[in-house]
Length: 99
Length: 459
Image 1 (tube, one colour):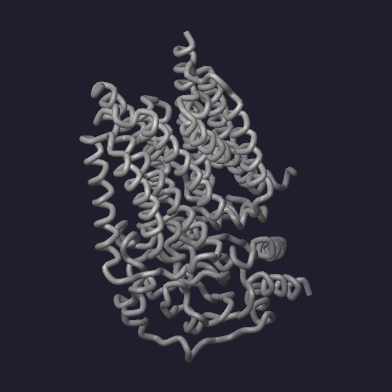
Image 2 (tube, rainbow over the protein chains, first blue to last red):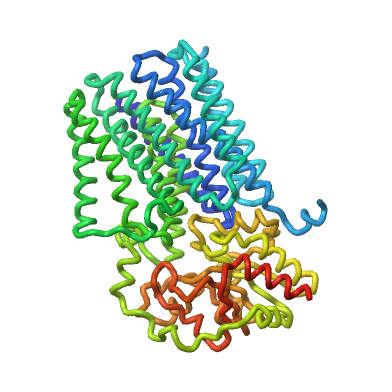
């Protein structure tokens, strides 16, 4: 069991490090889309909620899982859609002339 | 076989998420990057649906349909000006989902939980609950439903820190006595309470830091969920989100020349009241101009820099501003936009609004890239910005914002400030810029003033 946690910690630290490296490269111009994009990605907690909602462990878990699925889906669907809507607006001068 | 397929889908999703974030390093690749991340998410969700514990899909389908509809509606209909509110809301949903999964796991296993599982469940529930109520508070403050003025009381920091310590103490206790469910639910309640209390003393201008920080907490809560469920994709995505939020909050704190702890425990407005106010009191020598005066200045300039602030967002002046810039542009006046990192209520707030108004991003400059250009500029147009253009940050050591990097607008030959009234900005500090001889104040709603300016220039 502690092995599992230790392995998880490895993954966590490495991912955080990769995240920090990647994210420091993002220009301030894109900080809002970055925030809404990472927010959509963290909607991955949907994966945990799906199991809770579909497994019928007990009634409480199912109901909590159902609410969690709803909340996480809002983030996933809404997050990716609005990030795309935002990024679509960022254009250079030439791009605009071409339209 | 199933398990392997699920693991492969998770692995692919992790890679796609990282590639997606990498795409964000340039506006040219950002959109494709986020599409890759969305594909990753789709794979991970489809993979999970094959999980052997899932025996029925009705609740899943209902939840996903409702959530998908709400999410899509919010994405399609929410105006860009409401973006800080939307981000705050989505952090609260993320926090809620994590907290509920944690409670569900605890309810299911209760007393059988080993210490190594109890710790991540505790953190998941506490961070999730704290993010949920904290983000709702931030949402309320942004909406104006809760006062944007910092709410402070005696021993606030001491009581908040003790509450946090008690909550952590309960998590520690639960690792020894996991079956003590009363303690668990007290811990959950304290998490909700902490979220409210931690955001209560934070004022409107500090919102960029708080929103970034809540972003980070939401990520960490998701990561903790990953530890509880032994699920690497949750750990990875949560870590990415946590790192992103953490980095942004550090950036924002730096842009205000304040330490992290100062933002969290400082209650800016309250500090400003007691601090000595800037030496030059503003009431006297301001130079008020009419629309025509401002039009003349702009018309005779060769180069103009526009410095927008939260006031532009409030009056939704970005479209009128773009119109004005286009007009100047057609008469061969160079127009650039200067964006301070903490202008607005969230990181990158001004950039999104300008992009919405079709301003090309190659005209938009960050603080470091434009600060040397002001001295070579004929006219600066300040639209609803205050503290981020206050030269007192450079000159007056007594000023509460002393040391904060600001836009050097006062170095330009002429400065036009569009402002609603002479009221001091959020921080309650007088702005030396407004009394400079080369500054012209034009009072009124930014959008109306800009529309009138456009009309005057067209004549």
